[in-house]
Image 1 (tube, rainbow, N blue to C red):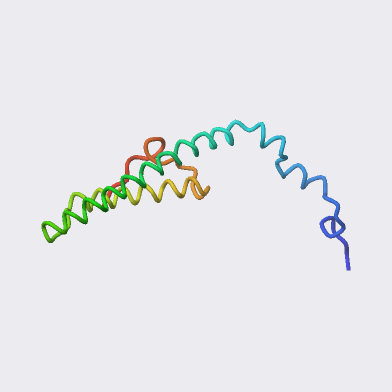
Image 2 (cartoon, helix red, strand yellow):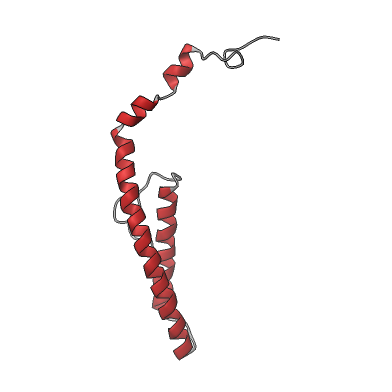
Amino acid sequence: MSENASSSGEESPNSQENTPSLANNLKSKSIWMRLFFMFVIALLYSVSRVVVGAVVVVQFFWVLLTGEANQKLQIFGHALSTYTYQIILYLTFNTEERPFPFDADWPNSN
């Protein structure tokens, strides 16, 4: 049975070169810029939640009064839900594309 560096508890010199160190991460401008954008986008997420709530209430009363859904509210609600999804993707590091109004356009509701 042969021993390799990882099983003996020692790291090979090449593994240290390929792994970014904490000091490098702390000095990385891109990581701090992402944190800034995450704060701004988290604020937009809070606003979008309030707007979703308003759409829900208005749509409910529209249906209550007319018997059918308001199509313009449905289209806006679909775009808003897509936008909220894009925000969550960015905040959870599943994409590097920042949602509207930064990298992406307002979502199309098609």
